[in-house]
Image 1 (cartoon, rainbow, N blue to C red):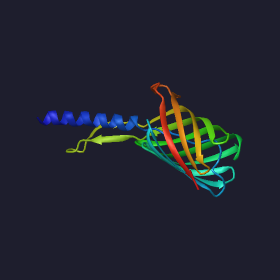
Image 2: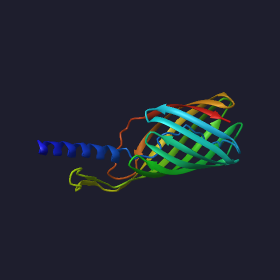
Image 3: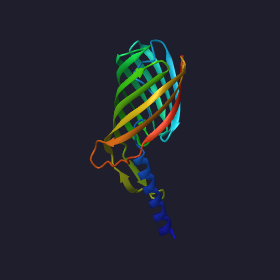
Image 4: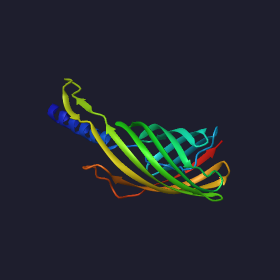
Length: 206
């Protein structure tokens, strides 16, 4: 009976380890055009979709610079964005962004290339994101003896993500966004599904 319990515990720990190591990812959601928020202004975005929930806050540090926080179900981090072309009223915007933070079972850093076009109340956008993830090593020990049952080694891997979406401005300060994205492996041994990630968001600028 004791042997069975030990085997069951070990099996549970293996499943837990796989879940932890498999869930170490960077941010999976964008809901953001290349255009900045605007100096001294703030923007709050809440969203939900296949990647679960997201909460984003951006602050206009300067005319072409934003800083912010992105909180998702599997990651939390800080980000900064710089717009090289920044059409606040009409036209194309181009920007780069980057961030770092903690993930479930590890940490991450990433960089975005962003392009968008503002026309009246519609603002379509597209972006590419490079993400590097480090999974923390974990030792699982026997609760009775304290001996190490097995170890999850540190792992590093990278993936890319392509975003396509649009904001729809309900008022000058309220928007609704829809987006889809697809993941692409950039590391050998990392296998990703070919399904699309989709979601919707609601944004408030003030």
